[in-house]
Amino acid sequence: MAQCGVQLTAVIVANAMPSEFALIDRIRQRARTRADVELGIGDDAALLRVPAGQWLVVSTDTLVAGRHFPDDTQAADLGWKALAVNLSDLAAMGAAPAWCTLALTLPRDEDARGATDSWVEAFLDGFLELADAHGVALVGGDTTSGPLSITVAVHGFVPEGAALRRDAARVGDEVWVTGTLGDAAGGLAQWRGRGLQSAKLRHRLDRPTPRVAEGIALRGLARACIDVSDGLAADLGHVLAASGVGAELELGRLPTSGPLAEQFPDEDARWRLQLSGGDDYELCFTAPAAEAFAIEQALAACDTFATVVGRVVAGTGLALRTPDGEAFALATAGFDHFPGQA
Ligand code: ADP
Ligand code: MG
Picture 1 (cartoon, protein in one colour):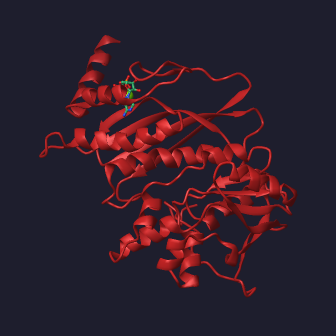
Picture 2: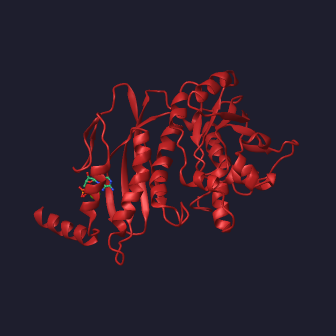
Picture 3: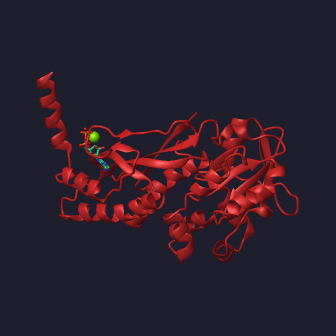
């Protein structure tokens, strides 16, 4: 229906940013491709080749201004983080990332001409730095105007049947976490307090490291796995609910960075950051105790360490114990976008 098509085009042009097509062209120029991309940015959709014997693993995540990052976050850091949080989801499945798409909603730069262009260039610096580091090709997306919001989708592969799922924890498994916990939450708490800020903690908030190689290395060793985006208590809670088990965590074992221990010397406050604070993007996984040595070796080969913080038990929910053996109560498990709604 030609008439219908004409009307639709008029609406799209009226809503488009003035330089939408120039922006897309610039993104296309800067993005690298890979051999399994038959057709990338430029057509109505991308054409991609999935290797035989592999499952396609797909995930998407959005960052919204005023909700997911401090308003003074640099554009390059936002670019990095928008991709990092998505790669982290693939890592938690044990998948190898291959492709991504990028939907950008950007405020119009009515007063400052060229501000959008330079913002996008800086955003791409961070986004493509991480994409290139993981050999991920940007194969498409969408560009619109509105309040700043960034949606990325990532696609990767896992050998058939080898994915690390939330529902695979078993009673008796050990509960592990990679790296250290609470740094990003510490950085965010300091930014909110508008006091002294540790550059190291802030860096962990702005430039999280997706544990991609680690997720792949854990195939066949770990049972259940999840990435810590909303806080250890909430995210491990998802694993427990999906697996129909409970867990006991020992707070004295929570892996703590030097900067976090220095900036938050009070144990109680620090544990709360480590349990309820999000944005760490470490992996939390469960595994049979017999795999402990193999896990340490596999992660050492990725230049990463992991720590056993507790064990899976029969029942439901998460029991927290202080080093004195006392029960520890946590008011909120983690961030919830729709609190109180079922
Ligand atoms: P359509 O109107 O058919 O949806 P668009 O004009 O939105 O096409 O996009 C044109 C091409 O540019 C498509 O291949 C799309 O995937 C790509 N594209 C649009 N915006 C982005 C972006 N922000 N990042 C990467 N590719 C993009
Ligand atoms: Mg489009």
